[in-house]
Image (cartoon, rainbow, N blue to C red):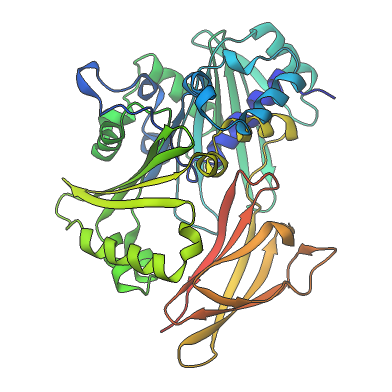
Length: 445
């Protein structure tokens, strides 16, 4: 059965919120903001701290219109999913969509984070068709309806048995915008997130850009992006102290925000990562270079499609600039056309990383290596093919005690890791467009 326009909007908006911390960006080559002021997308972006009270927060934006305008110079494969979506979604032409912008925040509690945020899809929409679809196809979901500042408003909530929380959500629709909001926190409802985004666009609530030095610096440094992500955080001593590598800990010291962006140049693209430090922090350029050189030596395969990595420092900033394969950049970007189209056509419910907990226990193997035993403690069962171990790994085994190929509570695997190295349990979606770290730990020295 073809998916409705409502299905696409619901899925893509919610998936954007889930994927806020895992995307790279693509710039058109602007050199900062200039006299025109900040890019227009910042008018939607409120400060999540106002609603959630969290220090970890960020934004992302995807200029769909600009990407489509550049399609002749880009790899063809990403647009196959776009064309498929155009065929399979009733009465939707994705080329009418102009931009997707997101803002959200979360606690740094990996086991049970409180999170929430909003996404707006700008374009041209048939409000009557969308509202009819929402009302006719909302099986199992009880929406309340209303209106807000000229938008048709739908909102409700669902229980999350795994987290023991209530997830609230909302959609607001007019002829030019669809705003999606969601939250699992008592501090903010999905409806509150949607209304905050609308209020900000109307000038009735302060913009994040004007409230945060980090947000302003990320936008100014990375320019008016086609795809861009910026995240502000407080790592805290607890997280820094878990990093055993002295050089890595030094790079993290005083780090307050990070952003990613890049420039497409046909078959290659220039990708940038920008780290922003606190006012009195030392920018560790030499230490970062040493870490990069070591990474090249220890994991050469990770740099097979990366050329000309350059590190430079500025006022409170550390910038990594590299040339990468455009196709690779597209595939790893959670907001590329393929990812958006796949999200639109896969199901009526947005999918994201599984919710599961893992325990990593360490034992001595020899003088220079440690043995990690990873155990699924509880939560979602996960297809073993979707899980991988990444990091400073010298050898690894297969998952045992599985159920029909699924990793379930009690399933285990083992790996050899160099002393002081890191291991992570990573989940990757079936289409390869999204990945997430589910657990990680550093080996004792």
